[in-house]
Length: 68
Image (cartoon, rainbow, N blue to C red):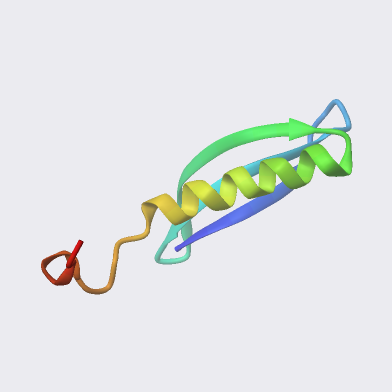
């Protein structure tokens, strides 16, 4: 399971990480970045969501039904 973690850094900025949990423990962390403004934080959150979405596997392989 993956989730986005927001936290305050020692410099006062907001840090964004993508964390992966297995059996209730964080097993992998990817630091996306840190920012001060709300717009920059939102961009980092979108980037983090993109990382999570790229790791998802399709439930079904529909490539053999592609008619293009």
